[in-house]
Length: 375
Image (cartoon, rainbow, N blue to C red; front, side, top):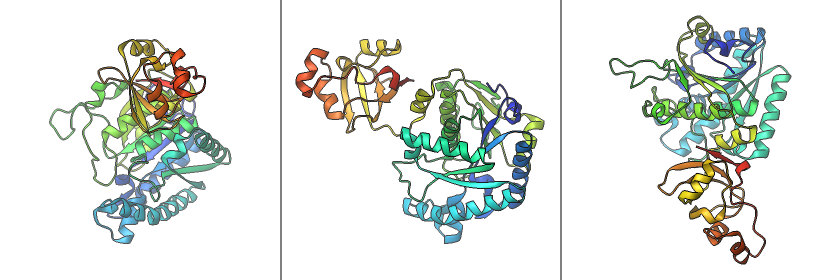
């Protein structure tokens, strides 16, 4: 496991690293920061020469496209504007990266993904295989959310969480979020006396409470809260994540020299499937359970119909549902074995009573423990 910031750039401890670049770093006044990007790509080429495998998650498409189309508010005035800006900006962004990497004798590979590509298990595995093959072939994958088709309801919404999910899919050891802030502070860094939190072992509610709202630059869609959510996703897969200030030239070289930033050390590691489940974001419904069932789930049991007290949403079998206790406390999430209507028909009923409601022999559980993650 990667234990500190500098180890993220050591190929002996971090063979494969995801580097995420925020819009504020890459784009200024609607144009690319070419000199800064050249310095970053030089760092990437140097890391690759030492044996690291680098995947880039790059923001900036909407900002670039909005400038070319003359759209207000950086292309974020409406969903339609954002989609139009992304359509134009994705072409520009791909060209910028292809040219910058080519100057360092590296081949760029564009990969646009949607939330569904990483939420659906088969498509997730396909994305994983594509990333593996691109790296094996010597390319540098440049990944971005396909904002030209994403909707408000079905999207990552920020590239911080996307970077963590890409790290899961790529079986990476680390995620490096290059940002316009130096890391996580114990309070708003604009306030006097704010202290940089250099090391976090497990993202707890107390850690999340330190995060402010919104993006520091106003260009991007993520803020510190999104970065902490990304750290939670990475943690579930045993992936170390770091937030560092990327505004200086040669940000990777600078990180090796200073080791300044916030690093999030995983304190738990789940199976590959459970890590995928834990990182899923598109919850389609919710099940509330009684106190006895909540205790059983905490002990690793499957969720049985007898313990279900309330069903919310309209979902199909296989959907991702949230699980809550009798006081509304979050227990976890999992893939449900019944549709919403079937869940309502059998909630609170013992196994012997369920067949009459369903018209067929009941399954072993409403949510099996192998398809469930806690927390």
